Image (cartoon, rainbow, N blue to C red; front, side, top):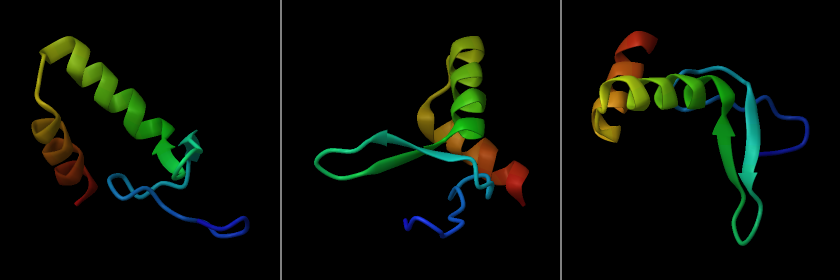
Length: 60
């Protein structure tokens, strides 16, 4: 990730990224995916693998 690059989320393809954790390795997150995943986890009690699969299917 660079300062002037427009990197995209690997799951939804949007550019709404933020830094979750900066030390020891920067970890980036997508605000849109975080909202979708947290909503699905809370409402339906699904596993993380199932949620990733659903998001990837919506992207296609």
